[in-house]
Amino acid sequence: MKEQNLADLFKGQFIGMYDMYGNAIHEGDVVQFYYKGETATCKIVYAPEWAMFCLQWSDGYKNKFPLNPEKYKVV
Image (cartoon, rainbow, N blue to C red; front, side, top):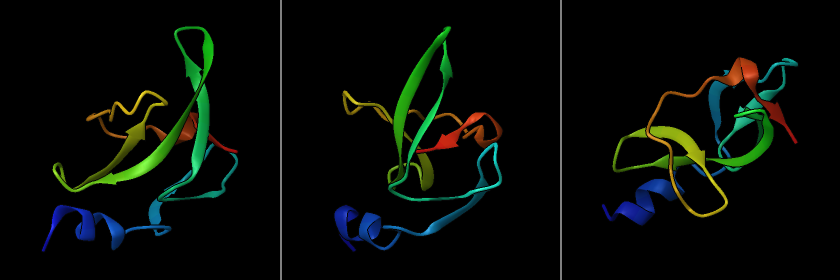
């Protein structure tokens, strides 16, 4: 299966985590959190190369570290 097709399987899916207010987080959601004293905004995406959900920054960079949903707010 092509990598793009694999990522498409997870579009809009519940990732099994909730934000700081108890809202379910889905693939494709935009979340806000504090990073280095400022508000950061990222998108939740599935990364097939790591087989995990991760943050995608506005410049396209995907964070390989585990998500920390209790600090996120779905916007």
